[in-house]
Length: 488
Image (cartoon, rainbow, N blue to C red; front, side, top):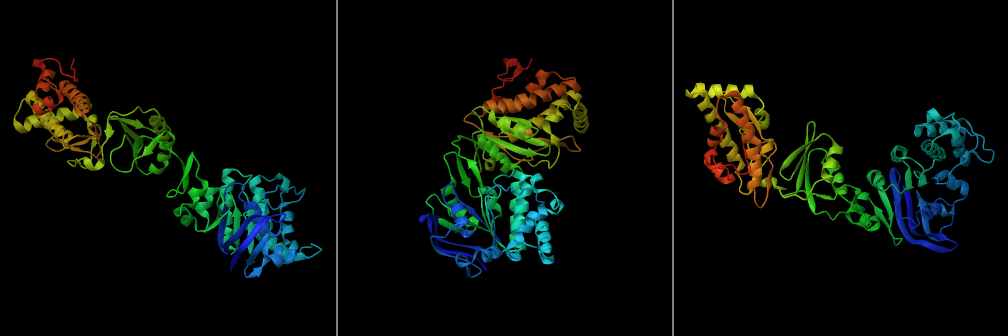
C-alpha cells in the first residue's frame, strides 16, 4: 500500500508548474523530496495536501483517489505539517495535539476516552511526554516541531506530509527530527514524504528520493541509485562544490597541484582539511607529503622531514604552511621493508641512552677480546653498515631512516625495523642521504660513543665504510673538511 502519483500536474490559477509527475511513496518508508529552490516542491506538497487543486492526473493513497475525497475524509487519511509558524495562544502541548483528533470527533470536537489515548500515544511517539503540560509558547523550535508532528500523528493517518519541517531548527534538532520521522515511518507503517534542503542528511536516512531537477523533471528511486546515475551531481553541483557520490557529501572543488597521502583511521576526516588547504588526496603512487596517525597524534612527512603533530589543529596548520616540496614521498610499493626486529624503540633514542651503548660496547669487546676503543669501532661499523644497507636498498628512493626502530639482541647487535615502510624520492637524493645518515645518525652516534669510550671522534669518522663516505662526498679527517657534515 502506498501513495501513487500518475500524470500529476500542479500549479496556480490553471498555470502548470510541474506536469507528468509519476512517483510512489510506500508505507513504512521515509521518502524525501529534494530539489533546488523554485522547482515546485512546496507546490507539489500543497497539492497533495489538498490545499490547492491538481491541474491534471491522479493521486491515490492505498488505492483511493485522494482528489475526490471530502476534506474531512482526506484529513482522516493524511496529515500535514507545513513551514508556517504556529501561534497557538495559551494552549498546552496536550491540547494542541488534541486538535489532531478533530477529523474523528465531528462538529462538537469533544474528545472521548479513545481520543485521549491516541493523543497520549502521539505525544509519546515523538518522545514529548515530559512536555505534555507545558504551554506551547514556552517551547523551543525543536520541541514545537515535535509537537506539531504529534498533532499530525493524532489524526492516525496513513500518509504524513511535511514541508521543510527543519527550516527553523538548529543542527542537533534537525538530526533528531529526521531520525524521528525515519523511525515513525517504519514503526507505524506510515508513508512519510518530507520536503527538505538537508540534502546530505536526507540522502543518508531516506528510503526513497523524489528529485526535482532544474528543468522540473521528477526522478525517483533509492538515494544510492540517483547518486550513481549522476542525478544528484547534475542537480546540485556548483562551481565551488561537487557531490562526492562515494562519501555521500559535498566537497570543495579543487585545482590542487600538491598531493598528500593520509594513513590511519581518521583518514577520511583529514582529507577534508587537505581539500580546504588546497591539497589533493593521493591514493596510489608518489605524493608530495604524507600524514600518518599514531597512538598519540599524527606525523607529518614532507620535504624529507618528519614532524610530530599532536592534534587535528596542528595537522591543519601544518598542511596550510607547507612550501612547494623539493623531495616527495615515494610510492610505498617502491620501498623495501626492514624486518630485522619486529619491535623496539626509535633508533635515534639509542644515541641518548649512554648506558645501553656502554653495555653494547662492553659485550662486543668481551665477545671478541677487544679493547674498549676497538670494541667501539667494531660495534659502530656493524650498526652503520646495516643502516647504510637500508639507506641504499632501493635505487632513487631513500627509506624513512628517521623512523627506524631498534632492538639490542643478547650479543649487543642492533636489530633494525621500519614499522611502516615509507620513503622519499628526488632527482638527486644525495643531499637527503647526507642529512639523514650523516647528520641525524652518524653525528649523534659518534657523540654518544665519545661520551662512554675514550676514543677520538676523528677515528670514529675514519672508521665509516668507504662506500658511504664516497657516495655522500664525506672525506676522512686527514683530507679536509667534510662536505655537509662538518664536525667541530
